[in-house]
Length: 253
Image (cartoon, rainbow, N blue to C red; front, side, top):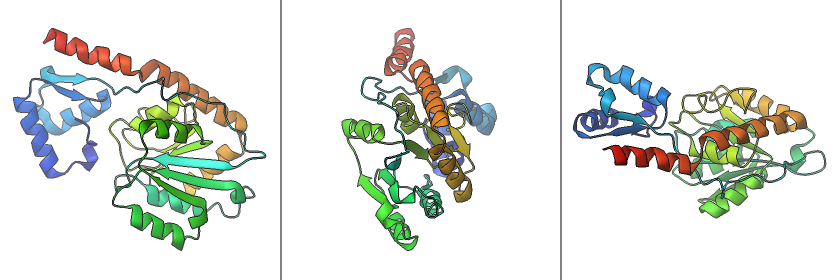
């Protein structure tokens, strides 16, 4: 089960009720996610059928490169993900527009990886905000391209309205990047504010712009957040750990 609970449609909730009744096992990506489903379903929830197995990633593909310095080079920001309404690219673009008066703005560039139904609207908004020359839409990237994309960035931004367990953030942490992310479920159980990232309210372009400005001017903070995120990824996000957890369930079934 992967769809964020607060974004589920009525049909998706009905599907989960049916699944909980007929399936042998239902896997959730986090304890928080499972607990929220349990509260919603009440007596219809079958805890004996439920299991929590967090996703994992290939830590050989997503790996760190040297941390960037912004003093004499470009300020490269980026986000990956589907260009859908469940993400918050609109707020991200508005935040970039608020940075026009910063001295580093001429060196700033936002790279967006992914595609989807929102792309035309996002491209239009970038034009209306007069930041079209600062935003590059890269489209869908293959895994190796995605790794290189992340490794090219100085700061990663994940603006979202909700997640279940963000694979994008897992990959970013494994690449040892400093993170700014929305303070929403599915993110704030992975990112702890001021420890392995900065959390800002969703749909708040002013707070997001302030966080970007803060990281651009603070090399030490960027490096500390990136290092803590990397260590967290090594401990929690290995795909071998995920494989062993699933294999155990099949072996014991």
